[in-house]
Length: 246
Image (cartoon, rainbow, N blue to C red):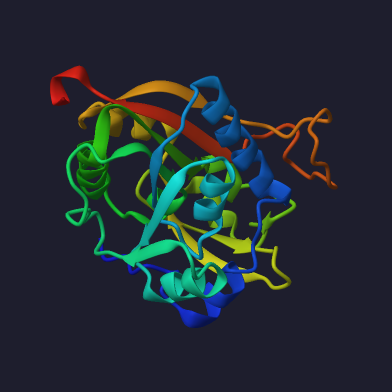
């Protein structure tokens, strides 16, 4: 399937650069921070699919030495403009050849797999991520759940796309991003939790933990939640290099 990167657009990149870690996004960032603490993660990190740099800045705010990479020239330009002192690099899809084997303690991927079209491409990318991880390194992959494309959220709207509800693995799905002061259309590729787990089994990574996080009335951050208290918008996977891949 031909599926061009929807974020390689200057207007969309400029809009995306205004996004923070609040609203529906906060649920994912909260749980990723919990994983950092639970597994005592630190050291050198690669932010695969860094976009305009918010996840790279998030890593640095948690003490990591972080490099951000992305396949969108427009996104990398926004990241460098916002954070000139950080290391942001443009790459080809799935190509981490600029980095040596076992270079990173952590590879974080917050939503880039939503736009990787096929299972084969996902497998190749995950194997490349595994290659650059240290033997005891870990990878955190955050992806949109199928629920994201079927409901209304603080940060997203899908009411204009009822066809999302009958989408299957590998189908295109659409969502409007409401944050950052405008409604921006994004097309993703649906990948269910079961399909991700099947994909992981074909890589040199093993699944350590998975989460389907909800907003909570006890969270430090609160807003006018819509579906977030009862339905999980994200899937969070913690992965580690398999022993036979060392």
